[in-house]
Image (cartoon, rainbow, N blue to C red; front, side, top):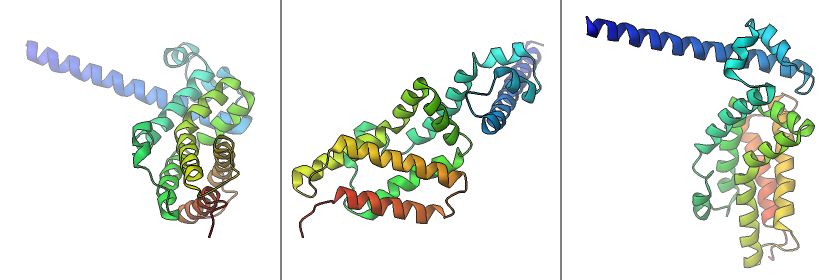
Length: 215
């Protein structure tokens, strides 16, 4: 009897978890649609609730406000990036950018994540323009790649492989270029495949890293 009751309880918990996940998914899908149509700032929680077909109380069980909701989306994308080998600082010494191919491997990995979350990244960038808080969140997302670029620029300066560059400024310029390029790509305005995009970005960045190298 107890074993049977235990199985029934387990099924009940599993059903509740599945239902909870499905409700969260509905909210997220509704938010993506409304954010895309109206922009982050002009979207209200009431519109998301209406699109999702849920009650107000249900929304508050999952998210405190629309900022919390978009931040949840951003965390999902960050989790994907964190799975890449080079993302963490303790891998920095192992990263080489001695060839275009070295850079292509890094950029291809980033772009693959952006492609899987193409419905998120433009929204986060747009929100970062409208919200200082999201600007800081986006900076945190970009920090590992900025750290790689800046560190490698400093190495190249020390080795005499480049000159007349400020590593911090140049790394930020490259990131801004990549952000804009990514938005154009995921929106379909830049029509090319991943391999071609990764290669061309890598050539630009590699030549920047080698700027001023003596022949």
